[in-house]
Image 1 (cartoon, rainbow over the protein chains, first blue to last red):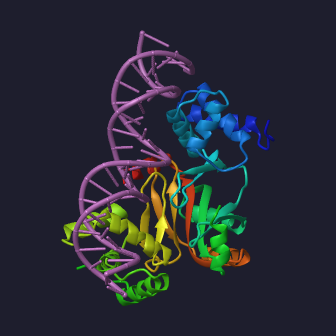
Image 2: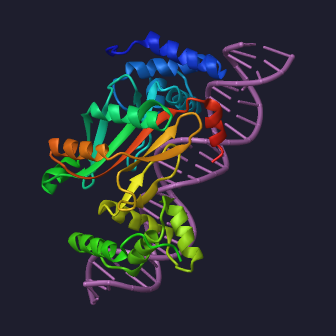
Image 3: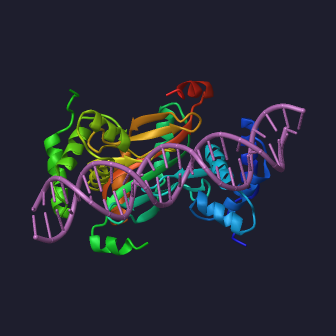
Length: 156
Length: 156
DNA sequence: GTTCTTGCAAACCCTTTGCACGTCT
DNA sequence: AGACGTGCAAAGGGTTTGCAAGAAC
């Protein structure tokens, strides 16, 4: 049983509020997807989640997984990242606030970092444009000072 | 004839340096792709560029367009953005420095903005992690205060 | 009972790849 | 001449869609 870092009840509540507000239905599948995500403490993509749920005996279709991930992103429970050539990756907004990604342009290595000043910028920019800020996704593209080190790390 | 905001010579030089450094060949196709991009003052995706070039009578294959866009991104002449459900979008790094994107989670509207403080953060973070910063892509997810206004603008 | 959602598989789109031909060095 | 790049069309992978069956309201 994985460590439960997140408040599943709060997430369920947030999801329920969203579904009611948008007049979507409360299906078991939607809550099962959210429950499984809450137990994951990492990035994941749609297919990983689909496989994991079905291996665990929870029968959910790919279509439902994709559809539910979309809803969870729309209500800001998830953040969706689109890295370079990869499939879309998701993670709980609450999981690791303020963290972003730096990618090496030579080897594709991805480094996570935190920088709280980005949140301030995000909030100010959104306010200036008349929007209510929800989340963000920042990718910094950079290169290793030493290509050899970088190349070594490419074997991720 | 479109306005020429960018210094094509400088871009050609930058590309030539990169190709030499990486031991890639100086093909006519690669320079034609760059030339066409320099004449565009906007975001574009690979297929748009492919169609545009071929309609203009320049016969270049999709494979070459994709391959060249990849090279131009690697040498930092282009920045590659991966927005929500869309295909990859590119633009000249030099075109509009420091500009990023805010997307409305309700209607998908995309607003461009400039904020120079992001560059400072980018440079500091990269330096702290031991990387040399090249570019970045920041997406802020937010919602309109007035959903009706937002919905109206959804018809983009 | 009606409408929305699910599941499945096929369709879809964007991107990459294999191979033969052409071009650069 | 040799190696690399191009063009074409087909393959590939992730995601969406159409339709019939099932669940929510």
